[in-house]
Length: 195
Ligand SMILES: CC(C)(COP(=O)(O)OP(=O)(O)OC[C@H]1O[C@@H](n2cnc3c(N)ncnc32)[C@H](O)[C@@H]1OP(=O)(O)O)[C@@H](O)C(=O)NCCC(=O)NCCS
Image (cartoon, rainbow, N blue to C red):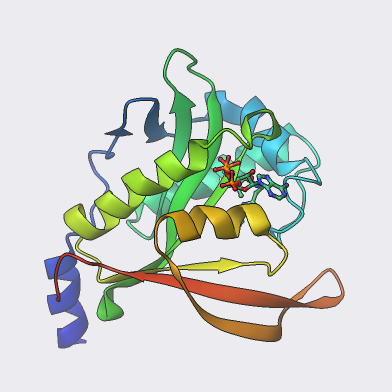
């Protein structure tokens, strides 16, 4: 218990005020109920959700519930989720998050999704760069992991572009929709420092 408190104090996990991030082409900002249509379009699209073992949103209320859950997680400093905005277009084009934080191991997981209209344009590579910088240089995590479906070639390419390394292949370790699914774990060690 004492060790955990020491570690979390060092990690500075506090998302208030919300950390907006920015690169040349995109902003990462907090998702609000006004983003409901975009969130619904992403989470109800079976092709976009193909490799994400979560139920499809059936209606806008499901999307609103998702936004509410995200907002609570941020307020509780349990995880953080940003909306991805292309400069000049205030609608969110995607979402990116740090979840399943393990402060005691200085480790967290990264997850992301893009609206189908915006996939294949190199947007997620840019968003992931911002979140890696934030996770390592602001939150002071030591390592990041990503859990992907072995067939998710686009997601794997995004990770490899940021020098994530394939750490392991887990056979049938996820039970979803009546099927046992394989998953692959990639990880990235903070190149800048040792905690
Ligand atoms: C995975 C995802 C985030 C990638 O983001 P993106 O901005 O579209 O990625 P990029 O435009 O940089 O494309 C990455 C690479 O994958 C390729 N790619 C894109 N979509 C592809 C597809 N459906 N099948 C195969 N390759 C694909 C691109 O051509 C690119 O290849 P290149 O680097 O050789 O040019 C996005 O496609 C997405 O949201 N997918 C659905 C949700 C999802 O699977 N999230 C990840 C869960 S782990």
